Length: 136
Image 1 (spheres, rainbow, N blue to C red):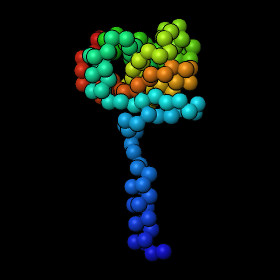
Image 2: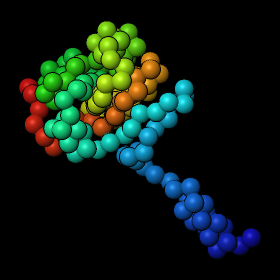
Image 3: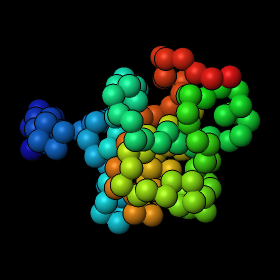
Image 4: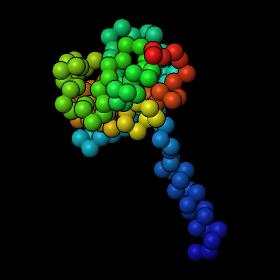
């Protein structure tokens, strides 16, 4: 096959399988087969403004949380989710919105929550992309 044929095959493959970036709004599967949904900061804010029964989890460290966080957030560092989530978040069907600094730890925390049996987890990335007010 010539180079043009290879390029055409690669292009078709990419189109068919839909290569997406990290900010896809599709549910993200965990190893257990369960999933959380990745949403934008705007979508998270709309949920905060329209819903009444939800929890916001800040997956950063105490120092980061103290420097500024989203109002009403519960700080559970991603490395403590498995130890603390069930006592701080007793309703496993409650809407849980998860963020961190840049989005890496919030994904880890969201996967851990789903692994613990939480059913309504939405991860919205990092506070660095949060265009709304924060508490300091």
